[in-house]
Length: 456
Image (spheres, one colour):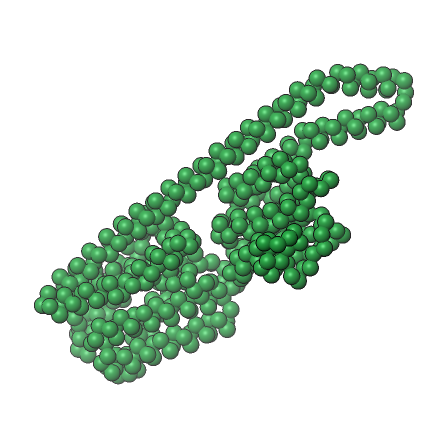
């Protein structure tokens, strides 16, 4: 085959591989956004250049006869995986580690379906220099193989393996342990197969053993995913129980206040009746206003707070807010909670979101603790494609806005000032999160906006 023919074949194979990666990332793993506005022309052009460079290297390897050595074949496969991950990251503006996870998942499924197809239709390695064998290779590689690939993807989709895999990618410990094992799949698959064929075992038997290893790994990872899901479900149930406990205590408190208010209601109404009967309208107006304010301070504020909390549909965030509300109630701090629209979720990882929001609320609570008329205002707004989290509190210390991000800086003494440094470090890992800090009219305002995939 000429250099041009090999280059053209590698181009088709690379494009098909990249399309499969994008399809898996969107439809099966549901990680890549379907929003085409993020795909800039410059990024697409740079991705094409990277693909072209990878294709050129693969063509040179083939023409120089370097692929007869298993080490070079594995090295070329890793090159293709890296190029695909880099291209997907460029086009969709995703982190490399997430793209690497998508590419590995797709690569394993492609290898399994392709190897299975060749095992069924051929009994030996095909020589592409022979036209007849080249036609068989093209038929299996671009006809039977893709069919087996999509059939296997459908089975994995029905088994919800994609959902479990996505949860592993979002779990920090999985990246440091499980992803390393997955990244070694070209070595673990082709290394033993080459050793077996070198020791006299037939090609089909060697590849059959390789195929058996992949379902075992799939079952193992599925089991790990179920354990992780059960752990999170248990944590969610604990949060729900905590919410119910807080709701019950709040309702009991409101019921007790209603009893007291009812006990005094007749006496208040008697005083109102006599005042109105004597025609003292100004006193009557003041009396009604005082009675309304008493009701709001004793019962109305709690009712409004619980109503706003009901708009938070994300269990973990609701659990965090309930905990902080209980702490502020014990400290004598009034919390003004404002959730303008139902909050279903955001693009941020749940752990990162809770950490960031918890840091801002803790700082606000600490600043106003023990002060007269201590108040903290918390606002969550989901609209126009953005989710905004804002925490506001009155300032009682002088704050240097330029130094608050430095680790160790604090207005409250030594051995403090770690929260905002951690907060900034977490948000630095997100391209679509826009933090803002301001001091306005004696209030310290911290907020961060998350640009979602689509408007909510």
